[in-house]
Image (cartoon, rainbow, N blue to C red; front, side):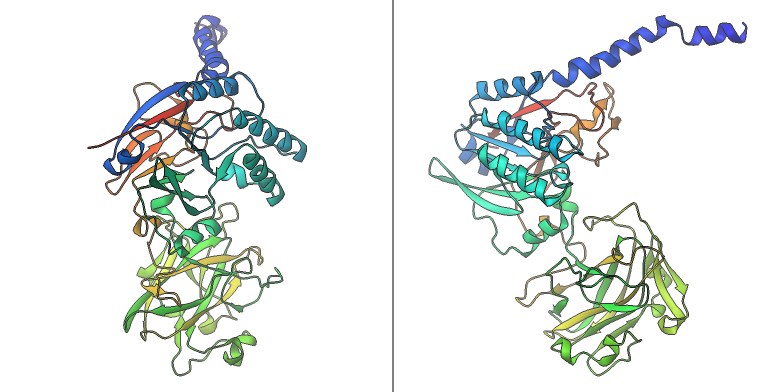
Length: 472
């Protein structure tokens, strides 16, 4: 067989027909073929409130216009005559031009205004709802409010349904938001449902103090300097410990490259009383009551991922711990599985207020964004509540009956009879779609209505979920 014959044999139209038919199906038919899925969830507490109620869950609407898919969604939901509707984020497409974005928000509002629910529509935002400037977010919030949608921004509310109380917890997707729930001392008083765009956020996002190289003027420096927090955050760098003895401090990557040579925990009461060395940006000499850690003394076995010991002629002891620059991978939310960090132990006194300072410099990246997260093994705030504790997630604080989520689109493009999937969204796929028993709670992941990045779905139809809560 000649090369010409092989070439034409391999691209024979006969063999391309099934491919093009499948492509047309995935672009034209399946994205508009919404499945109404009935999902039973066994939970006695929620069943006592919702057993006779029609509960609808939708997610990832990605409304760009009011086409056939949107009209089908409205009809299917209204035919159910739901008592409550939950939406777990991503209302519009991502219009780069402001005018295009406003049109999509307007279309989303028009669609949602046509949906009826006896006890209301409750929602949380996804990343796509927050990616743009705050003016866009505000426009979306106002449009959703006008459409009768209550957006929960990292908060807990109580609903009264036929004289019975149900708690709703709305979990956002930003670290600034998640900290509100870490700080919140108001726990759900009734059986609770958590709405979370990301399936794993409730059990993976951790509490931490942000420390940024730039100051409140948002100006950075390329030299060594002392910093104790981030200019965008109101979090305090004051920490307490509930016992005498050894404790652990952990420093994790946040953004770009950071170098650190000294860590100070000082009991001085006010900024005016901090030793002059801090204002002069010089290396610090320990005083009575201080806890001073030179990173040159940290054992190699306590250094993980991209952090490395390096030399610098301006560093204390000419030594520093440096995180190699990673300009394209900002850690938006510290995660329990994060691999880039270092840690060490120190001794402290019970009940003493310590203020944290880090001596930092930019490690060949942007000084205005170089930053880290800091955690402790058992730190407390002034009220005696746990703060910035290592590996402490929201699931360690809140008891929830069920988590309702989306984000993954179910993979969007799947292969039948296979657990493998092509995830066009780029979201974590440990919890891709359906119901999961997490031992401490149950998680349901909705496949979503719209599409992300590529306008297609394959063996992964858009989904409207009707939830049925039953007793054990």
